[in-house]
Amino acid sequence: MMLAYMDRAAAGAATERDALELTVVAADAAECAAARDFGGLVSARPAAVVRPASADDVASAIRAAARTTHLTVAARGNGHSVAGQAMSDGGLVLDMRAGAASRRLQMKLVSSGGGAAFADVPGGALWEEVLHWAVSNHGLAPASWTDYLRLTVGGTLSNGGVSGQSFRYGPQVSNVAELEVVTGEGECRVCSPSAHADLFFAVLGGLGQFGVITRARIPLSPAPQTVKWARVVYASFAEYAADAEWLVTRPAESAFDYVEGFAFVRSDDPVNGWPSVPIPAGARFDPSLLPAGEPGPLLYCLEVALYQHQHKQPDDVDERMGEMMRRLKYVRGLEYAADVGYVEFLSRVNRVEEEARRSGSWAAPHPWLNLFVSARDIADFDRAVLKGMLADGVDGPMLIYPMLKSKWDPNTSVALPEGEVFYLVALLRFCPGGGGAAVEELVAQNGAIVDACRSSGYDYKTYFPHYRTEADWVRHFGAKWARFVDRKARYDPLAILAPGQKIFARTPSSSRTDRS
Image (cartoon, rainbow, N blue to C red; front, side):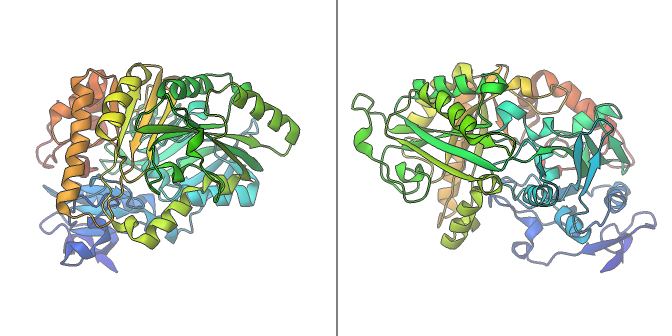
């Protein structure tokens, strides 16, 4: 319904001329989607949910909040944050998905004078929607993805956006040409590396602190036809890491298009053990092939893929795949391969979601922990954390695979380890049927893992960070903290945006004091 903002969410503020479409949440926060997220760990009831149909609507909501002494604004995509990062307790939540849907996504193909192609997409569009639109209509696709595609474009660009393609093509924050952003002062700006560059790079990986992404221009290239997909198993972490790092540092002309990997428990547990490895479905894992001299609690699966383009001969791709695989030191006999379509490969996690929804675990709490750990420390991390603290698994995937710092632009706001090669470690826990005490125990274990990284002097950063104190944020950003604070003062001086991150406190409009 169309309501004057002053009548509902900003009583006592100056007359508000902008009429916004507001949905006032139910009295019970448990019935409000904007009060929850995928993590299921926290709940925060907003004063209202705004369904913006345009960037101007986003700007109107932010300006209205600025006229008050306390209201904050959080942009919510598909609700996949895990610790309340997209919530606004007592403030406004922007439903970016509703805006994208109301505009029928309004994706369009843009060509440059040099023949390059781009997709202009709303910040609330899902990457899955971008994939299907680009491939089906134009035979094109972005180069960089996330494993799970039902995340919004604005959401992943505000964090990083990583997957097995990141080592070669860079993360998603390195694969965007232009942004339309509404700042914390309610100003709509189009920015790029050559126009308002500081805002452009601030927003990329900026955790929503500097602006709301309402549109992104994503580079496109010809979409592959098929994918040669393989998984191989290692009993030795040293050999696994050596092979993985060798693969991600090869020249582009002799590299895979995708390299990932995960640790799993040496058992037949259907969730934590070796049944999670074989592809295609129905293939058998033969534990008798494992070497007797490696008795540790964990095994490792290296996952690779090579794209088949229409202009390439299948024999050339097979030869290249075989050449690289022959050099790897995996356990012979424990290899699995499949040829699948490109869209099917990128959509592979959908099957996991469908199964989790059927079992009920999709709606359960997800106390996830994501870390970037330097290659310098990854062997010690494996010994102390994976084999020590997590030897029985986490009732979900334990991803661990390398990427390259040189593929990330240092001008973005993302905090990274110092080393050139670092690993994503993603502990993707599912807690079906877990009560409050069980969830609290896992959250405490996540804290213990971070404490262990810190006390051991690891070169690490949290990915999707969520800290409670300024000291922790200062430690997280390190030498980039001063720049982060300066950008906040420049683009969101009242600290209206993204309050769920718990980085900055809201400043009353009558007292604009910069935080330092």
